[in-house]
Length: 58
Image 1: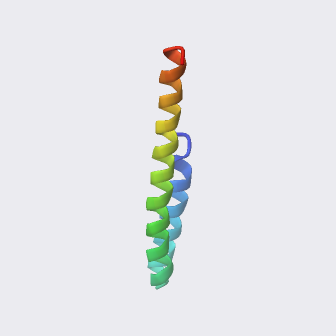
Image 2: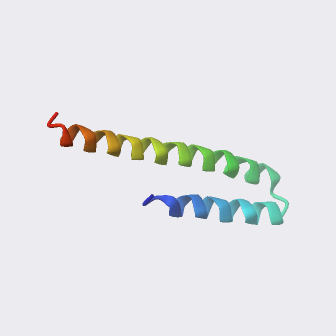
């Protein structure tokens, strides 16, 4: 996926927060990673649907 980099950044930030006792931030970043992944997968699904529609002439 072209947006995988953002997931890596969020994981790195969470690791930093964990190492530095920033527990609330680490928890929030974990939730943010899930939201980012959901949006990335949703967008990828939209792209696949658009490709199918175009291929079928819709």
